[in-house]
Image (cartoon, rainbow, N blue to C red; front, side):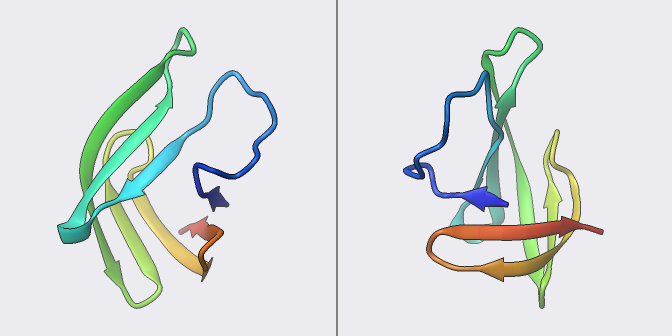
Length: 77
């Protein structure tokens, strides 16, 4: 489950974030080996309820189980 950045998350050493931009660009941020954020970029495409991400760390195909203003729920295929 992916939540909006303003969601009141509890403290953590790092979290992954995914930003789907218009036109098919994606920005991915995840904890690096020393817990500092690492940013990568790639592409995304949506075909029906199947989301394809071509970016390091989150690359793959996902089924979109639900999407609303508060959360995006994906299941890896």
